[in-house]
Image (cartoon, rainbow, N blue to C red):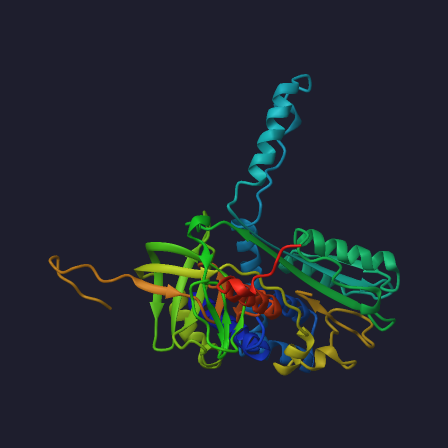
Length: 435
């Protein structure tokens, strides 16, 4: 059974890498949740039959059986809930606290609030299915969905504005306000019969935090001829487009580190959890595209499971990536076509299955005792790289790239004006008089 778990985990790594390959663009950064997209597909697979089910299975997990696939996702969701979700302890029985004892009651409430926020890293995922109010769902599907995917099913009228707001409120609450107004009334039509949502939220603190005093301006080389300008003392080549980036730094420390001939692989853990940020940094400055094309599930798994530690000096940019992409197009490119067509076979889900529209919104060095210690490894992420947020089970909760597009481009005209003023200050005859 353990072997099956490892194999299906590797299949999920392959699913994530294929999604990454299909949406990667050298000119823009991206971020998505492979776990969220895969979970949404697994829920649709629960209600699919025939060719629709076969297409989902092939893209999601290849030759694995339906029971193994659902077992994998059920186990993963339970793991997330048990290990990473905010813990809310049940209220003590009323008889434990005297109703007249206000001090004891207030103490219990304070403890309750503290315990809710004790986790240094929080990862939560929720599932919800919205169904057209006149669609009858199979009782067997409803029961299995509730058992396996811990989700709720609501029957609504998609044409009512209040229900659009209801869906958006659910998404906003599930993502702690990070995703607002994802759908509009125009997102639905009279043909819309089902909307399936998987939302995922993560927030974590570094195990070893980056100190603000060690954060400085530095260059980020986004592409040939483009430099994220951040170092005032660096002479830039003519016609170079400049940007702003902030480079965070950690001095020599022991980190989980591995490498091959194409990239360096660094793991930065989050505090009090098994979750960590993995950075895959190409050894060639502009080699991200080649790394993404050649990276295999087996190679990725080897680095994810590596526990070797090295002395490393870490420099990574402070970044925030926001992106939108057409998940339906990506999934169709992966071979899941029938699910999004009128002939989609979801007979295990509904008793009336005409024109169903389904949407998944995820909307080695040797030395002797007398020899000097090896020099620390330099890990400087000053050019495009790939990042993953994973846990010790190798679930990829988030995956993305940083190409430099998210760093603000400097205003060329302002830069030119500053240079002109600098030249003028060196020539008194050209100084402008204050008026």
